[in-house]
Image (cartoon, helix red, strand yellow):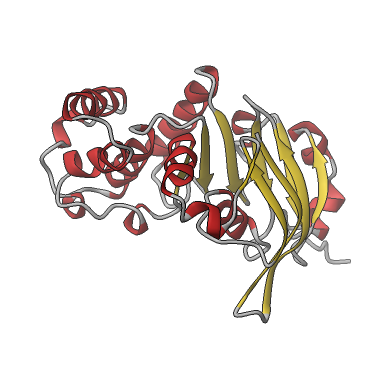
Length: 249
């Protein structure tokens, strides 16, 4: 579904974030992007969502090149946006509408759905996420966990085939973390393709069938199952994903 070849990206043309990244994402796959903070995971998700464009290399989604020029074409952009959704690490960076209902309606309206279909989408998604009672509330009045649910609802309302999650459990209380992990599992069972960026390893086997591990020089250095990655403790220490305590003599 998604094919990246030798992607490179630098901020301000001076600060590298991706350096020769190549991989594929297959239909129905659960892929985890692992690496220490600053290794390029979030940047890569933004490239996959068409928010950033590589300075070199190529990105194809659903059989088509994704470029800035192509996304300026309304028909191409609507088709692409309908098929891929991005849940940001911080809900505050994603949620902007006056009410929850309007937030969830925004995506379907942008895709041209009629009013009846939009109302149905809103009801279905709010019900699925257990936040129907929040429909007329202002997002800024909600708790962090509630805002996260609203952000996810706004993405699910467009019914995308591919879901991108950036550090999905960061900053959430344990109950909300457990709920979100169960939701990701349910979405995968429903046929969604999941790409999840994280530096946490505690729930890796629940969100991924396959892992791409980034080094701190912004390259992919490991590609394997969660079991294979978690079993290579020395490499995880080298990649700053786990800490090795020094024992005093």
